[in-house]
Length: 123
Image (cartoon, rainbow, N blue to C red):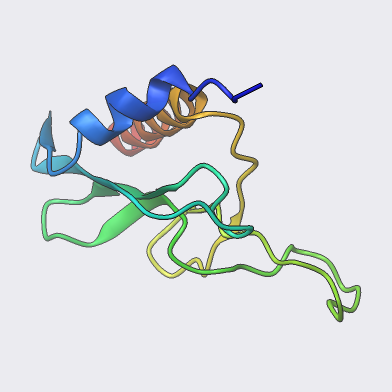
């Protein structure tokens, strides 16, 4: 029996290279491309979804470019570190993101981007 591919993967791949104006100089950049599935990237897609402020600094990002350490004080010896993660501000090194499927990734990213933009508007 073969596994049915996540329908959202096609949507994510179709968005590769898009830059989306969010008004007031803020913008979203989407990169996504196929890679061989591996234990670190089981869905077979590398991605970077990012929200940028007017001068180009990333203020929110979801990606799977590198492993991140979970935010706790336990030893990591012998444990696999997650590649899917999010950056909550410009200098955040990343916190794990639980990748369910590509559709949920897009929903989560755009909801958080809207929340960040709303918070910035209220300042």
